[in-house]
Length: 98
Image (tube, rainbow, N blue to C red; front, side, top):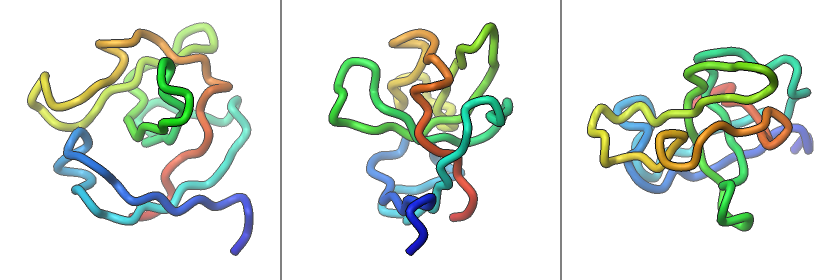
């Protein structure tokens, strides 16, 4: 497999209904200056460096992104509401297919 692609197994329901627990999702590594609002991205958790998260980009401002889960339950997602903005360079890849 091409090393620019990453297949990830979803754990949890923070991205429900878009992504469900145990879905396999393909991400593509990209340059941080091609990231856009509304993309679903894979990134390193800001406090648990050995832990990756999947979230949607809600906004981008001055090289930082506000990332949110798709689940409408406000308690279902650990996201930028909890840990703040993420520097775009912390984003590993963007989702290209489910």
